[in-house]
Length: 193
Image (tube, rainbow, N blue to C red; front, side):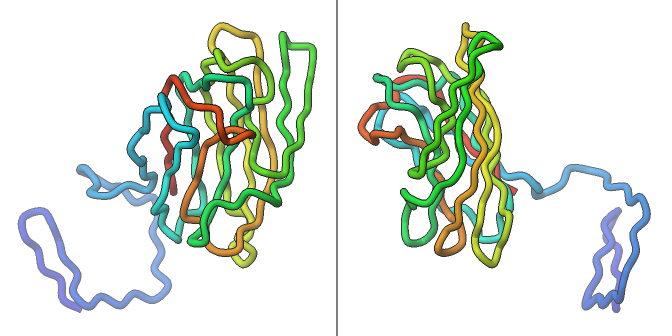
């Protein structure tokens, strides 16, 4: 193993380490990469779906973030996931619960996606986050959990569920139950890690 030092930067060449142990390492400077990667936020002001594609195969968690998102009608918003074969529209398990004014609860189950909004109208401006986590890599099983809330309301929508894909996840879609309502406000982005 050769060690070369250039300025403050040591370089290891052909290093071979067997069972190394690091105790409280300190990293200085600005890292050139990131553990969490943010994609480019997309305006949710038109179209019937917002897609994020080319998610790397090593990803174990995807966070979908909403800022003031609404549609032009009353079909509820959902998240769908997919692989190289496309977005999968069946086989989702779970439910979305609406807690309105801290008392009433409405629970909706849906098999065509992770429903994260199940009350109100198209004029709702939804904000919040839903986290998708890889439960089992051998079956490509993902879980969903999180909550969103509309601006100016005492309502909270929360989701929990799971879905197994036929291959490795590489895309996420945000759309509506009927697939025809159009987004008309806000922005959506994802983080992956």
